[in-house]
Amino acid sequence: MMQKTFTAILAATVLASAPLAASAEEMVFASWGGAYQAAIKQAWIEPFSAETSIDVIDDTEPEVARIRGMVDTGSVEWDVVTGGGSTVMQGVQYGLFEKITDEMVDQSKVLPEARTDYGVPSEIFSTVIGYSKDAFPNGGPKTFADFWDVKKFPGKRTLPNKPSTVLEAALLADGVAPADVYKTLSTEEGLKRALDKVAELKPEVSVWWSSGAQPVQAIGSGEVVMALGWNGRFQAGIDEGLPIEMSWDESIAQVGYFMLVKGAPNRDAALKFLNYIAQPQHQAEFSKYVAYGPTTPDALPLIDAERTARLPSTTERLSHAVFSDIDFWAKNSVAVSEKYTAMMQQ
Image (cartoon, rainbow, N blue to C red; front, side, top):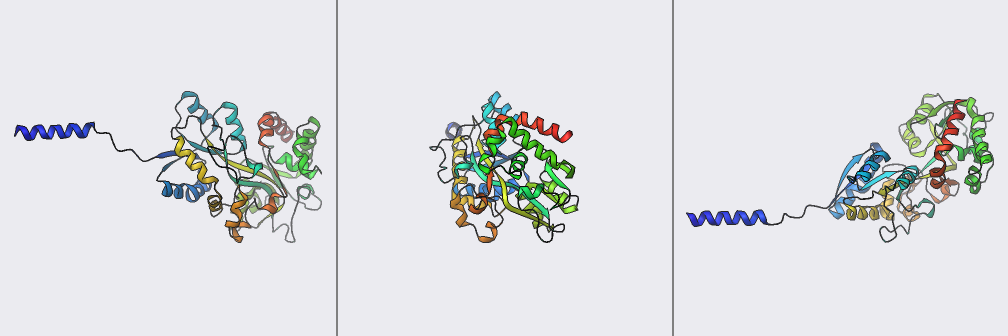
């Protein structure tokens, strides 16, 4: 009896002291919820997890202030976060994101205009003109100059309540060449020229929108006849049956990014994920779920014609686009936003 008891105790001791089996590799991803995050999950997260056996835990609301709190206190919970160019540049200023080298992530196929040292470009979306087909049954505004032409295209407009993309469109409408937009905006005279051009349109602006859904709703309800807004939002409205048309003759292209948080607890898994989303065959998958375009031209031949017609980053459409300059906005956003707000309130 004592021998059996001793044997049982010894066995229990050996089991207790044996190392636990390695837990499955995982990482934590934070984005902005809604249809965008759902698309990321379907196009990338679920296939990536199935292929690598790496569990990806979802979170939301990766505000810069929250990321900064994690990094500053050494309690980082997120590995990869998403954001636009302004988020990237704010994060760089605060030292929140790790620099992405070519050895870490292969971005050789990514459009040069979309690249930054501190994030992996995930998708391209554009600010375009959306207009009411009911108001303009024979065709609406094609260019930003048309958007500003209230005689040829009468009716109320809506513009963003932030200056990014609006000032670029204003200068294009005023005859500035695409290659000279940021050179012009970088001067005091050029900035005034852009603000004056927006002010010229103020009597026809009934809504200064703060949410991407607002311009779609405003056109759909008949409150306005045209808007500057995001192509993905307009496309969603079109898919819901709203009488909206988009013009692609000119656009301001913007890029979404996935960033590696400095001090990420699951860095190796995060890098595998970033390499995964950068590959052309995986970039092509995203457009199945949302009308945003791939950041690599090699993905385009992998996308069928019907989906390609919805995307902002085809070769043809990008040839008429100005890429938003995130360096310019990082340096000037506060001062320019103050002037823009003052212009709106005058």
